[in-house]
Length: 189
Image (cartoon, rainbow, N blue to C red; front, side):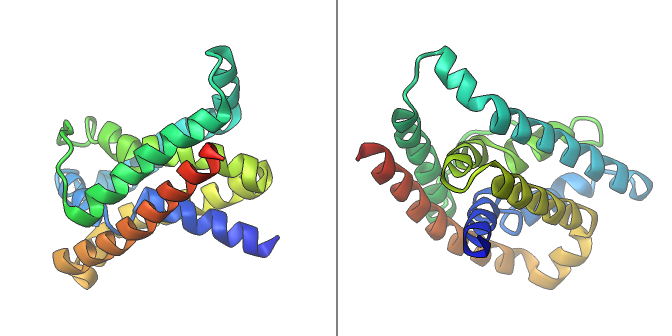
């Protein structure tokens, strides 16, 4: 059970890419007044968690409603995870809209940065592989890591720097690419 939890935690950790997103977190959070950083961080995590758990609990029913086979979802999700991994490793640019300021920063921070398409796909697949309980626990721990990173982004950015964060992002991207290929293989069989 501990091995499955670690696999779920690490898989979600890689997909959320909290460490790789530190430069983006830093950019958004520097526009937020110091007194508001904890509040904005909390709101971003609550919104990210709401999206994550909405799809964790109701994603399968949504697939069923649209008559989408779960293996097809695994292949499609694997392709998305693969693309996000390649984006991180090779530095592909995917057009994204970003807003600045404490009110508008919630949407890009919470989703798609913390809980984006790759995270949603991963938690839905992990709920079938490892069960709901382990996936919920791994998701909650990852949301806490993301919250800690948002609140302490200034200090973490100083420690890692832009290059250190980019290097970690590339390593996470390679692992993410492998996870995407694994999802495609599982769905194809």
